[in-house]
Length: 339
Image (tube, rainbow, N blue to C red; front, side, top):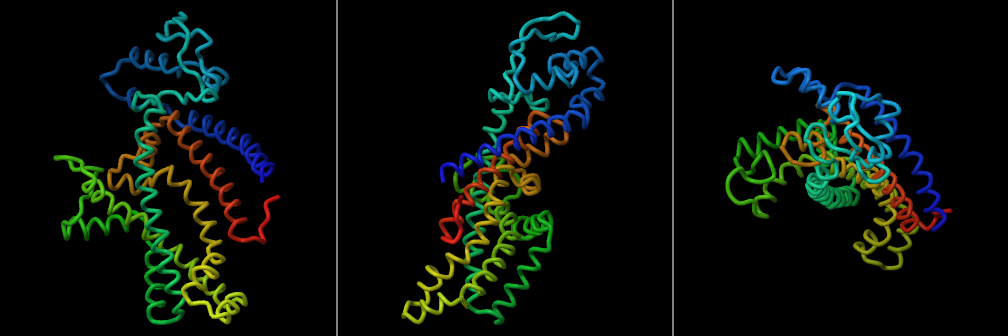
């Protein structure tokens, strides 16, 4: 196990490095992060030139800005006023020392922005995932134990209907029904605009985003569970367990579900890293102050320090959770051996 984990981690390092470098150059070449300020008549050309000098945008992309992004500029003199005179040493330490720079849009260190938004995304995403897994197991197991009945056909039809709808349409329908029509739930933000932000109010603001995120996933996951359970229930070892006199609940939970959960583990291993990236559409619609909304705001203004950090965060999470998925596979299915 130890050599396998070490080998996988060593393989991930060059992959993450290539991703980071590609994203850096693509974002830098995609546009001017100060385009909005340049179009604003309140800023003069001198103001724009000063901003570029302070952000280091007046330097060549390669090697100056790339090296600054990589290892920092606290070891070399910089021109902060754009007058051609070196004013002092820089303050950036580079991503190799954990400094992802300062956001062009929010004028804050990227680490501070992420520390503020990431907990909100984890709260929303993990809650939605718990709801998804619980209801997917309930629906999938129930449908597999009563195949081709009226209830199974109804659940299948509802699953296909839900899965075929885009998430923004589901979110808007939920808003129309539960917020506009019935007036039961709030729509925007994480807390009331007025009054105290209690745990109950925070939970009420989470209901609609969680429902929007969960419905499509429940429709997908439950179909995988149903199919895998139907194959497992008809296998020889399940018949043997029943022949030994084991109760139906124990047969389903102990023998059938454990082996049928392998496809679910794969799906979860692929989808859980996306929790860190945030639900871009859902967070934007419901005004949830998370990573997804931060990504959209940064993409709109070509905020390259935030975008690069965002992509690296998701890529790292994908590598880590794929490794965890392989380990869980070996535990669930003894036939799978990690070499």
